[in-house]
Image 1 (tube, rainbow, N blue to C red):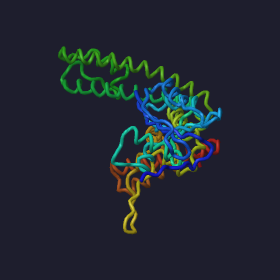
Image 2: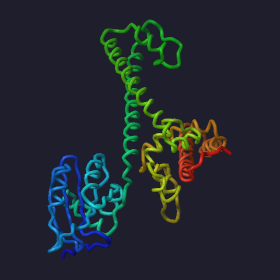
Image 3: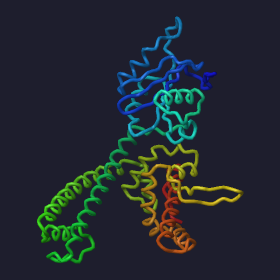
Image 4: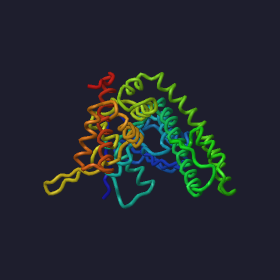
Length: 361
């Protein structure tokens, strides 16, 4: 016998679960007794969701509009639906996909079931919430992530150029003695290299693409510098060893609001720089980092780790101690780099929470 879930969350008359997709969504609306007020599929547009929700009649003879709360799952395209709902209902909850999977995983899964589950969990106050970034932080994230994409594309193009050049080790003129093959002297050499016509054509095309990407990256860099100049949070972050303009801007945008974290452990876990633990039979062992947090924060902190050891003796000592404890070698150095990144995450939390610059001691 099916039993309805009754609302434990006060202050709302209708609980709206939305299984949202890019083109279509399924909506389930329940009252406080768990009865379905309305359900159905809609096109994922503001007009469709507004018409679906606002067409619900008021209860009985009351002309008072019921208080409504909605929940959608955080995903790649959540932002438009979250914005629309914020204008239509009284409150919107953004659900964390990983937490939802743990709470309500099932063999049977479709849009109707998922939207019903969301409304039930919302009524019980059991939605594992994700952070909805402010509009300013979101725009900054898009600028910074776009730059990361451009740099990755440029790196791929450079790798392809290396492949072509390496296929012709006896080509003339000989490679100049430069450390950067893509600097001014190296680029001049690449443009004059005598290789077969087919590879020459491909090399010229790649050089054109690389030049274009370089121009785009420079434009992004100017936006980042402006972003940092106007932001007090970035100024604080730049006092931390290893963190320059770009990493400061990225960390600030990805965090958005440091007060949303209960404490430093919660923040470090969010970065994914926490070792996994395997506990069994009274024994506990540490594993590799779980990597379930914010990948952009984790990347920035790991990249800042080695530069940080060059200016902070305490971080250098931590790096050296991990390398020595793990027996040296390439793997030990990787572990040490991650350990320093984890320490940087603690420092970032304290600097932003206390709103004071970092002091090297």
